[in-house]
Amino acid sequence: MGNGGRTILWIAILAVVVLIILYALGFFSAEVEGELEAPNVDVSAEGGSIPDVDVDAGEIEVGTEEEVVEVPTIDVEEAGEPDEE
Image 1 (cartoon, rainbow, N blue to C red):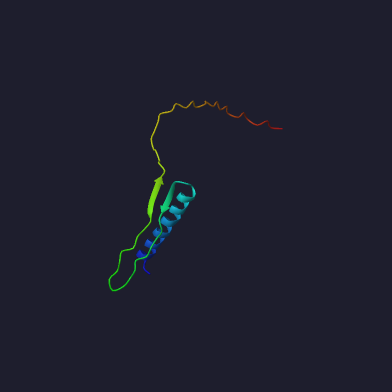
Image 2: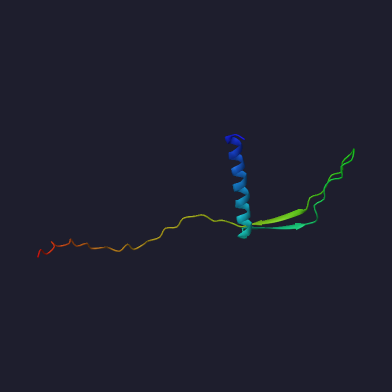
């Protein structure tokens, strides 16, 4: 496997991990109705069916707002000469 193949593999693994984390955190939920049915394969194949999936995804709102923050002032005094004994 070349470098391009490894890159694609890492991207696929990262995408799966991100989806698992988002699902675990409740960012989206999926309700599945019906059963998955594979198509009958003969000389002529009949179409299979997939379940109806209703996905509710969370929302992320990004914005900016202006805030005023008070910054304390600090007075620094120079140290005096050390006493010689």
